[in-house]
Every structure is written in structure tokens, then in C-alpha cells.
Length: 130
Image (cartoon, rainbow, N blue to C red; front, side, top):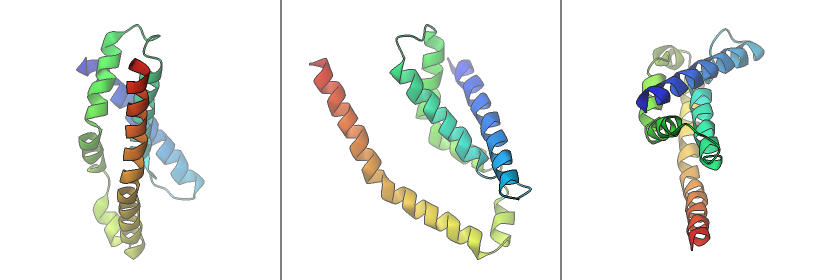
């Protein structure tokens, strides 16, 4: 179970790093821009996709590996973000710090919205089971 999850996490991580590098080159930077974020987005989309087409996925180990990493995504984000050069970003000036604080506050403001969406989906799922 966990091996399949690690494989999918690694694929999402490398795809995210690739997209981050391409994004950095497109905006004129010689750096990875949001690679870890793209990786986690890919993993969450893959988990969501596997839940919607669960009946067509024949490999139960793949589904359980996805579930494992879906439950572990916050520690994974922290671990992957640790590989980023935070010291260089802080030394680059106040813009990096301001962007980080702004995005953190915006993310925290979205928690109630995401909670409402997930609770409404859970209610729809309960109504469908009755």
C-alpha cells in the first residue's frame, strides 16, 4: 500500500518540480517557482480523481496508497518545503516575506469556505446513501 503511495508521491513531486522550473523560466527567473505547491496540487487532484472513478480502478493497493498520502499531505508539504532555500528568500528582501505572509493569511481565510464545501459534499453523500 505505502509503496504505491510513495511511487505516486514521487511522480507528483518530479512533475511539480518540472512545472515549477518551466514556470520560473517563463517568468524570467533561473529558479523553481512553486514546484512543491504544484506537486501537492497534482497529488490532491490524483486523489480526488481516484475517488470519483473508484469503481473503474481495479488495483486496490493503488487506491489505498493514494488514501495514505492524502491523509499525510500536510507533513509531506512541510518536508518538501524544507528543501527550498528559505534563507535566500528572506535575504532577498521584504517582498518575499510580504508575499509569504499574504498567502498564509489568504489560505487561512479560505478554511471556512473549504469546510463548507466539504460538509455540503458529505451531506450530499449521506442523502444519496439513504
